[in-house]
Image 1 (tube, rainbow, N blue to C red):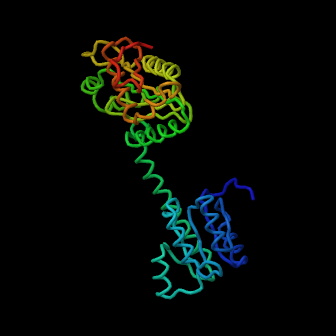
Image 2 (image 1 turned 45 degrees about the vertical axis):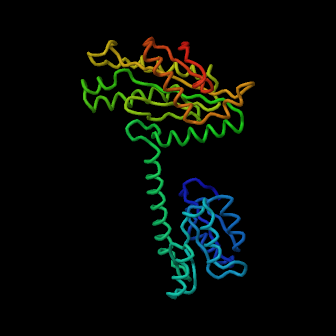
Image 3 (image 1 turned 30 degrees about the vertical axis):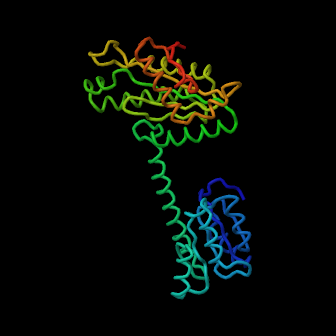
Length: 325
């Protein structure tokens, strides 16, 4: 069946009667993907293979009852929040109470009344959209469209562990808008917000790979995580970021030495190769951030539009040399 024009809402239909499955499928043909199972074991297998947005589940089945299937679904962490609607020929209070105890969200009686089925499905579709919006709000800084600090730290930890497993390089940049407090004081909050959005857009123009992540670090600071990127590549991105913001030609506050908004960029990196592999393995994700912040302070002190870098391995074992890009 062609999927063009169908609504993206994944539904798993479970009933041991193929006729019922076909009828439910016809009623819900506008949704995709629409998948089917005619036994409890098959339902669990399909749910784990591809997590549905909603499960319509028959109560009475020969291998596993609907109650058993629902309980099994709720025991799987990835499936625990998937709503389950029981479709049943019986609607006693005892059955509904048992169903709710097993983790079901709702009930629909057989024979199924199509308008009621559609109303219930659309209710859970709207709930999913609302949930997705809330989760997106937690992950995204609404002002700049970049990741929140919490989401950025979560992603950094994830990529750090992945790099540890695969012995891949990893780089981090921290970009600080020079004198952002003075800019805010002179031009006001609205203009400062516009400045942040323009800088965020400039950073997106230089960190364009799908795995790259830009986050709001603090105030006028942004962080850029560059997975599978050696220091040589990170230096290129850092310099392009400095040049991209400089090209915006945003007028700065009169109290700042420069007449335009510029960036101080510090970077850190880990390259687990050769003799440094053991030291890298002993490091933690916070070391990557601490090294980048130290490098940023070096760039701020130099004030020469050149990024500085600190190797995370040598963060605590040698004084930083301030070597420019």
